[in-house]
Image (tube, rainbow, N blue to C red; front, side, top):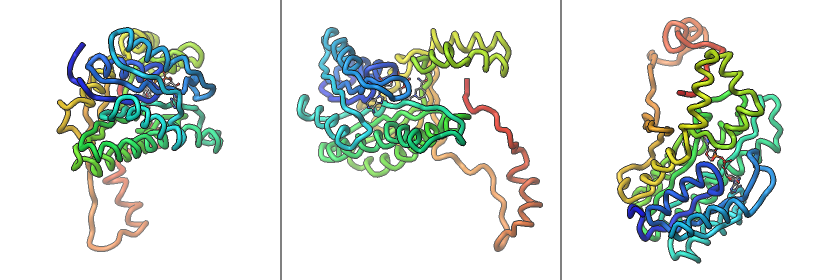
Length: 312
Ligand SMILES: NC(=O)c1ccc[n+]([C@@H]2O[C@H](COP(=O)([O-])OP(=O)(O)OC[C@H]3O[C@@H](n4cnc5c(N)ncnc54)[C@H](O)[C@@H]3O)[C@@H](O)[C@H]2O)c1
């Protein structure tokens, strides 16, 4: 067992499967006592079960670590409150919060119902806020804390993911502000855009024709290589290593940062993104002036049909 998190207490939401499971196990392997929170949902957030949280908490304990399961939903204030309280009531403090619980319901924007929008927002964005707010009150008093939020490349814009991308980019804005609110109290808040072949990706390949869609874009060979890379190489544990580092004392100077992470690859974004180019005049631009000027300057290389943003 490592000692990066010896004596620390962590909460990981959505820790029963995928990334959260690897993060909880990774934190425990470095000495943290972990509240393993998971509602036990399907990929689309439907249904509930205590089994995933029980299984991961059991796995950690069997390996000699300290853990307890929590079956609450992050999507309500009360549920989030009980998740955070579980850390205090059972382990006496809260040093690390990993906001990981999330799901997507993909549809083109013109088909997204208000209910689907709300469900995705509630778990991804509100859940992150509810847990963060409760944790920050405790961490402020302690004078120490680490918060790691789970965003996605989808937040940069991804076809068919209106609600999910809005929620995930909302998480980036929240991260930047929490970092500024809390830095002076010894608390850091960072975000990751992870990539790992978890059950959601497996479903996209098996049931939603992702390999075929990629083959149309890049050809059969490239599609097969990428699917193989996702399923065999890009494992949740690759993401967990970065999260464990960010959760440790060693990352004390890292605050308000956004990372992308997958197998063997960790990138840090320029953040906030710089303005690329500016046009200026003395006074107000008229719409007619802009119709003439913009295509020659700021919008010269822009296109209406946008390419995918995923960097892999
Ligand atoms: N896997 C990827 O490549 C990838 C990429 C970008 C972002 N993400 C994000 O990473 C996180 C984990 O994704 P994953 O691929 O491991 O998914 P996953 O479906 O395997 O795991 C998510 C877990 O969250 C739990 N959960 C769902 N709603 C909950 C709620 N309201 N309260 C508590 N727990 C809840 C589920 O039961 C599930 O165990 C998500 O936020 C996801 O959006 C994943």
